[in-house]
Image (cartoon, rainbow, N blue to C red; front, side, top):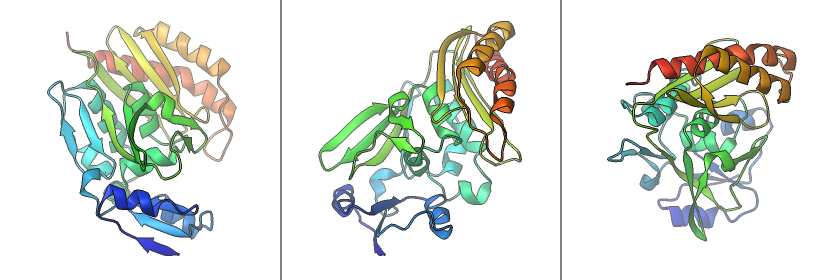
Length: 269
């Protein structure tokens, strides 16, 4: 296997021209897949030396731009009153355990697009955008369009995730991330991200190949439960070692209610 560690985005794009080249960010998913024999890249392009991929920039409105190589631990420590970034920080705090959070990166997680991962859910509820770079320049894609299927994204050959842009959310909005898992730090059986006040926008993970987004739901318990029952009847969740499809459908309405009520309760007048 060929290993390269470019110092610039331009050098990284050139290195990724090879058909079997892959990016190495935090390595928490890629190295595990290689150890299990599930991945065997011919060329590994490390992004650790590219300073342009690091750091969190807070805008005057409270929105944030998060560099792709920013670790989960750095995002979990983000102190903000803006609902959108707060929602992403809440999700980061529930990823795996400290050793993984100190190495894993948001860009690596987003590019992998695991349907049970935390960031895709939070980013879609927050209406975030993904900044993508490649040999043909940079472009912005809404998170709701970026995640296209099971481990499938809008990334084209030679492109990488540069940053994630999270808007602040409506003034006074609250945010909440609820996650049901077998043990603390595991991937989600069902996860729900919510943001809003009297009306909340929600995204559900673990119940399909991509998160399911529902917008403009009244934040009353009855309305949230009703929305959850509708989703449970229409979604196509997997059955795996974490839970059956029937179990996921059963818990979904209550998970939706908890997240929506928690977000509304954190909203300021």
